[in-house]
Image (cartoon, rainbow, N blue to C red; front, side, top):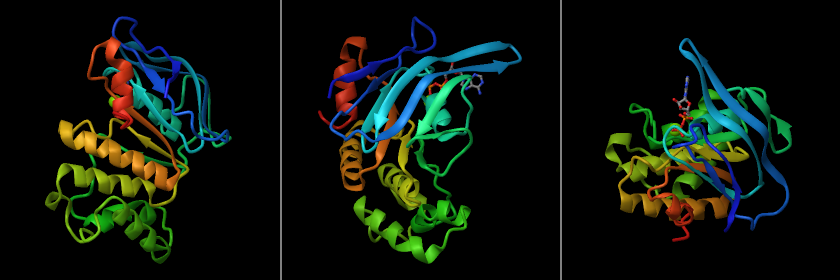
Length: 239
Ligand SMILES: Nc1ncnc2c1ncn2[C@@H]1O[C@H](COP(=O)(O)OP(=O)(O)O)[C@@H](O)[C@H]1O
Ligand SMILES: [Mg+2]
């Protein structure tokens, strides 16, 4: 429940990234970072985006990183997924060094990013189709996940026929369908209204408990610095 690690962000004045851990899980390593930093090189010069960061998350843990816009949350999640190389340091997912995009993560973004021409089931099955995995093996899993998030009966609907919260739940199923080891969620509920966001947080905690996945999600604090603890706990669904 207590903040496990406090980390720094980019610009000392504004950026402030912190990690809140739920230490109930066992000791199997999930995600480990040592000395991970990122500096983007651009034509206008270097953009330091993440100061060296160390933390580890056990398998099955639920982690939240909280910080204002621009403090490096997306950068951090992209590096863990292998989409972006760190400028320094090392990242391990379940003991394996991350050096390139890997299939061990499911990613959920701020907007559900469902394909408008695919129905709900088709969207959930997208990773299976892209990885050319056998559809018949994964269809029951996709159906079970949709049931888990309360979308049973909506399989044939197109994204526009669903509410924002339902679309985001479908995108959580899509992130889990190929049974990744960890789930990375980049401000997953930022686009939703406050009440739906609260409900989705509770829902996410339940899904995490039922699937036993390691979850790392990011969020923006909605209070002043002094309110961070409360915000972080509420983000995890405790409040
Ligand atoms: N592709 C990029 N090139 C240059 N700078 C970038 C790039 N992506 C992000 N940044 C910079 O890195 C910092 C962190 O960005 P980001 O990880 O998107 O933060 P957050 O997700 O917390 O809002 C910001 O200062 C941003 O402007
Ligand atoms: Mg971001």
